[in-house]
Image (cartoon, rainbow, N blue to C red):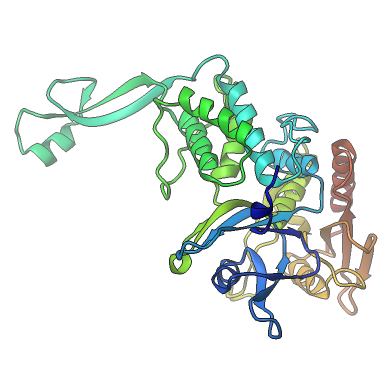
Length: 409
């Protein structure tokens, strides 16, 4: 139950909705404007009021001022249902993992952060039910007794011929492996965020206790690498979600003594990942090769770089189709013209007669534009994200079929 006091400190916005004029401390408004979390501008006619407009970042952040003022929480609700958002996320991370509605059990939550925390806790619990995974960890240290093998080069470089201590390396069978460290760090990260429901926080504390002997990853350090295998199969869903928590989508800044804590999904990136992974999966097992974020150059001097979201190559390793995913608010009359110019450049540089732009469903149906004097056709596809997963994946396959039929110059 939200108290009236808490309600005055909460700002509710909807992704890509019209701007809302709200009373805010100037320090909070400036912090939001500087962070890029939402578009924030002071109202020129009403002092102490700011115009806030959410873009494609959804989730929740809390802004705390250094002077002891009340924290202000900004919540941005996605246009797509939470369950559908998590399907897009889950499929992008693990298309073969069986992610479907109900897989991460988020239907009871209407906001992104509570749903994410709930999903991570449930998957970590499933991963750890049979106990913590153990593995061999290579350790290098200075010791007074020989254990494992002596690192001769290090012994000479560091000890100059001294017998002790000895520079040794050995493999230790331990729970302090990459998989457990990722889970521990994701749980710690969620426990630090405001807005996690009390019951979920209590369950996260239990998971942290199970991982108490595991070393958390220090913020700023690279995440340890792990490889999917039969041994860690029960961990894999939890690990994919842990990466979603830790891959930099969080908001934690301190501009000018202010503190911003929270978690945000960038729907632009999420939609792009879903579309490109879906297209790649559609061509798996064929003689075509898909490359995501494929680097190319527009000019002969290789001075103008470009990176299409998706390029399909034929058996002879030459480009045979190109696509770009565009999750954005389209203009009132249809899709943005700038996207057409960008795709025209891609087709010209890659030597293709057709290009494909894929949007989240808006106010325009599928369209095709033939470019004058160029012989190039640009297709614009619209995906309705608020569909059952099977139907949505079928739509992706239909786009893939159009890419497969792209004629060459």
